Length: 170
Image (cartoon, rainbow, N blue to C red; front, side, top):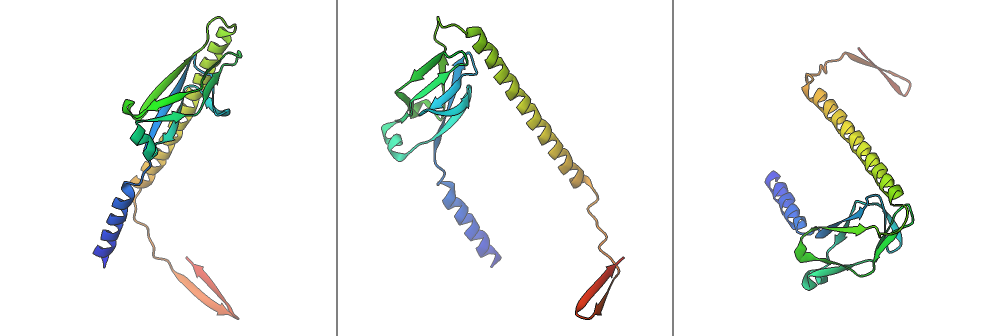
């Protein structure tokens, strides 16, 4: 019976292994960094940012997929847009696109400073996450290294009074 259960679990895991939807990851960069990324007029976050797209069977047959209209806006008001964005699957599952800030528009220094602040905040978030991970690992290690023998011998007595059971353990 135990072997049958193991076989069923193995077969189910093999069946679901091929069911994962293939994706491509597109990292959107801006020069200078920190521009807000919009796809289909929806704010996605600050550049650099990676978005994941599911590859449908028809995209595999075509060898490419069309992505939604994409634009970036810097805090100065400068912006750049790509209306017809195509991801070619032969390029691989990890792709990058960099939006260059248009020249001749005032506010470059403001945009560059904002980009540095975005990078600074992300670095602090990564440090916090690393510290949290280290704390969890330390807790796990402490628990794993503790003596795992527990004295389960207890002296309990129970008394029934009316319809209630009272238990006292020492």
